[in-house]
Image (cartoon, rainbow, N blue to C red):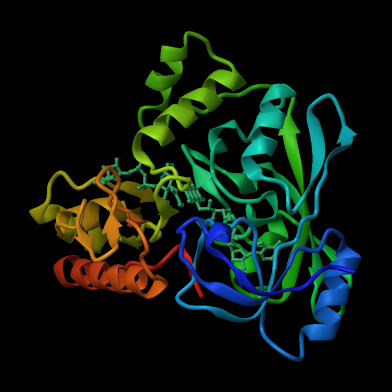
Length: 336
Ligand code: FAD
Ligand code: EPU
């Protein structure tokens, strides 16, 4: 039986470091324990599944049951001359798995080094960085269906992956617990170092290997993103907006230096960090919440910020970006 704790402090379970409590909290270690917990309590109060809380903003105490699955294991389930298939328990730490892959000489996820969170959360928003997305390395996602309490699987194609998006954020939101993810890693090493200054950073290490790419990504990340152990944050607070070419052209007319990425179907992605910086927010503080001085897309907890303070700052930023550019920013962080 999983122990259910009452009035449980969540400060250490969200990287923004917001000091709130859960009315009930449990960390089940098996699928049976998760079923047991939810079968008995689902009708009584709301529940929330969390991983490592690196993409969650709590705006107050959670008046229900917070479940943090501690499903562990990194197991090779198949291996052929091209690929190694690895099943990873949802409760494994993402970056420890990346390190395991690099040390095992398996390619495909090294660009995603140092992203906080659990392996089970990685498909939810299809984590991405430095020119890679986890969907490219996912074979299958296994989950517990909370209607039928059956274990089901979705192939990568059925997960409907997109930029910071998957079926787990849409149709299946709050209806499943991801239990494990099967990754397809490559014995062949094909390096992807075209994003930003990644190639230059790899060259500084003096070699081209999985470990070199991992180290280069870690170096770049450490140079601009705050360490949540020191300064509370949840990475990018907003997604980069995707707009029609005509909207982007209009902004560019007055801002010829606007950075952008062209996408298919005449769509354009604009860095939200740039929009926010143009509105004068970079490095600003309001009460205990602030905008990181090295990356305008990252909101930080400067001390004892409440979730409401951080949410209010995000709303003010959103309003000013809309007023100046007529572009609506959408939060990437899950606001509870
Ligand atoms: P949580 O924040 O705990 O949960 C996220 C969502 O998933 C919630 O809605 C939760 O209810 C749901 N959930 C969690 N586990 C399960 C489960 N087992 N079953 C069903 N639902 C579940 N993201 C990127 O994509 N790229 C980056 O480069 C990046 N950089 C970051 C840098 C920093 C410093 C920080 C703090 C965050 C960054 N992020 C980045 C965001 C974050 O790391 C990812 O979103 C990560 O996947 C969240 O994992 P988590 O386990 O902490 O999820
Ligand atoms: N920029 C600014 N001001 C800033 C920061 C950046 O104008 O303060 C501009 C620069 O022109 C820069 C461009 O924005 O070239 C892009 O910046 P960066 O490379 O730092 O990436 P990002 O678009 O801000 C995205 C992801 C990150 C991911 C990095 C690296 C989103 C919402 N964010 O950030 O993911 O690590 O690329 O690939 O897509 C996260 O999702 O939490 C996250 C951190």
